[in-house]
Image (cartoon, rainbow, N blue to C red):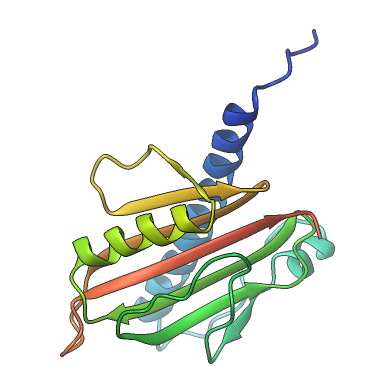
Amino acid sequence: MALPLLSGSLKVKTMIVRTARVLCLALMASTASAAIADTNSNAKTSAPRVFRPVTADREYACENLTQPVEIPGVPMFTGKAKFLSGLRYPNDRSGYRIGLTYAATEDEGQVMDWYRSALGTYSWKLLPFAPDGKTLTAVKDGNTFTVRISPNRIPGYRTVMVLSFKAVGR
């Protein structure tokens, strides 16, 4: 049975949900393996047996970033922010992916207001998700950008910003 074509908005939402699921699974896997490593620190460890094609390992391998990189079409935050970490997925066949984490001196509301305004200025379409107000997702030309915020514990910084970018194709 053939499925009807999805509308553009539904395609974007489906793509965002799939991307979020992949990121959540990756986070859960890394958290679980870290917890296991901590509890078995005296035991001899070996890599878990994973049944997937070798190409999948290369495709989803990430590079740790030691400095921020420009996200195409997304303005750099103009407040006071400190780069904490970043990941880039250079071999992902589905598109270019980046994740960057910053600590900002501004409070959560100021950060979100800045991104809402700046993304609108850069012609990104803001999606009406996240009723908690801590996540903002925008789309433009099939690309997806998400900013997630949370309180910060680093002295002098009030907000953690996690920026995620996914460009379709290559």
